[in-house]
Length: 172
Image 1: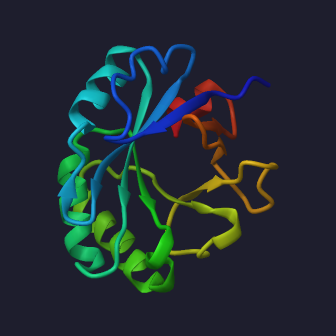
Image 2: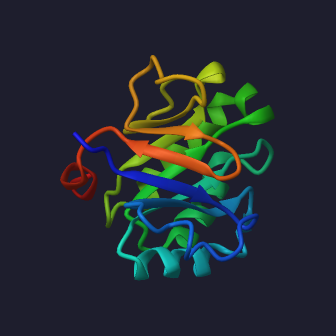
């Protein structure tokens, strides 16, 4: 089985039109804390034009609270196919903020009912925060925890794999 591949990007990557060639999906950062990612609209348009499945992700921080960040993110994500919460660093110490974010994201996304993923490193995995699936970072081996998406490379660009076929990805 050939598993679909993708990349994940943020404002730190410039023009992605060349790096998405050969991939079937892209995760694009839409927001961080209560701010928008300045490259989201451009990256989103480039990925859509290339026919990719598009996931939007939010980088969670402690402080503003999960509900406020979820409201900003769902608006910023627009018509992305998949939504994801990226929880790393100090935010890992406050899993209740991640739980609040996901619960409120479900409330705010009632019309589209999109899948919600949780992204984090396998080594610091926060557990179940109410997500539909896991997007696991492990650059040395296949994750041992259940995963839907696996970030298997982090430099010079983050690369990901979907755990299924292209048809399953499109249905997801």
